[in-house]
Image 1 (cartoon, rainbow, N blue to C red):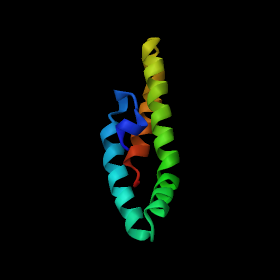
Image 2: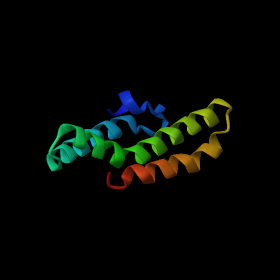
Image 3: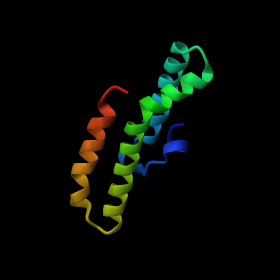
Image 4: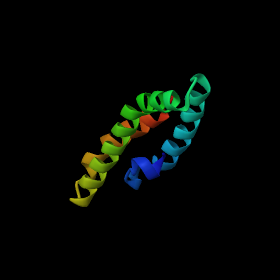
Length: 88
């Protein structure tokens, strides 16, 4: 879970945030389900899109910075920060 599973690029500083969210969401889902398997399934459904979007955004930012197109990365960084600020 967290940056070990999602491996975002460091530009958005989202790895630690994802790790904390993962722990909280997993605990929540396990507490709501009758089995660990059901809790993990609910966790994956709940976290999949958010984590995928943040990782893909951070990779795109890193790619733009690598080719020195930093100004094009700014809107992506802002969008990623807005998503991170939304409740998990």
